[in-house]
Image (tube, rainbow, N blue to C red; front, side, top):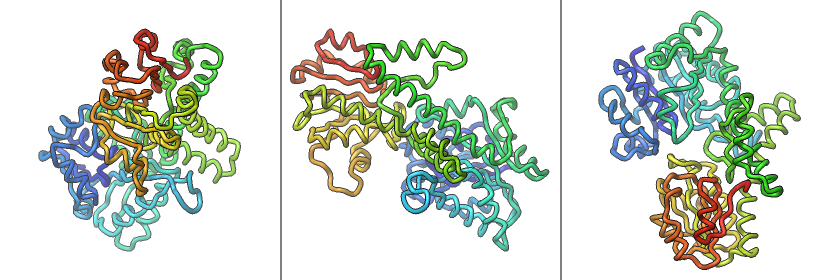
Length: 453
């Protein structure tokens, strides 16, 4: 297996293929995408996505055995292994709208492979897909009269944006699902051999296709459920005088629970959690399990409620009106160390504040004005009450309140004393990520509030 093609040059395909290329220098890795602008960015000094360590990873292999191209058909013809890493958004129309995964891009790729492939291939699902999508791909391939015999594997990604390179370098596990046939087992072993260049064999887990496909959805659902659970408790802490960080620390010391994903916040975002939980909800409804579907849907309802609760608390604290008041929103990415804004809590917070006629000033160190405007307004006319600052100090200058919505490290070390001096009094600060020392802020003079405190 000397040639790999990855279809899709996004947050998963680009970093994953860069790591494979670095760890398997004898394998030619080609990442293809029809988006010419994106491919040009991958071939430039300014990559289309921000991840710590990614620049060095790409620089090491690009031009040696890592290539980025728009020649999809050519890469498919030459490849031994084809990773499918295209977008699988939530359907917005038709059956399953708002829940089911939109598989149009996966199906389109399968049809292209069927038309182009003249030699046997191993096709690897890297996109997050519903259970039994592999069967659909296999049926499309087998229905094409000239298609070569291919094996379809499931190899879901478990990357966390902001730590993707570290996750790829030292994964908890690599999951590979395939058919329980001699051909399927051989395909699994071929893919496992690629990962085994740097991943210990005991961390490479093999399952049947459907267990692998479902495991991805369930993993994200469990993580999202933990976040929604501690956020629900944060509201109770505020009502009773408990401190959610102290509660989380106490329960996290229980070895049966553990400390991870127990950080209360304004709410989770990103491309995976909401989409995957809703996909799981749809699958449960489809298979006649309404009680299970309702249970998992409550995770999303709690997350939406928490975002709205943060905005509502801000408005109520500022004397029930923010009309014509300057509100600084620090952070727009859904988490630190990424420029991904998909489902970011900042989107809802900004929209809530704008609907209250606040003058919203946003600053994020990695998200530009064009992306912020697109996320908030789409094709609608821009709201003149929104502005984008070039620094945190600029955003906060003259603000009636500061809302920390993304946990960027630079927000921990701002000169809040100088910022306070520029603000109308009383000056308010709302820490939506619990990253700041509220007592020190109060000593400066802020009326400072955290989640669950």
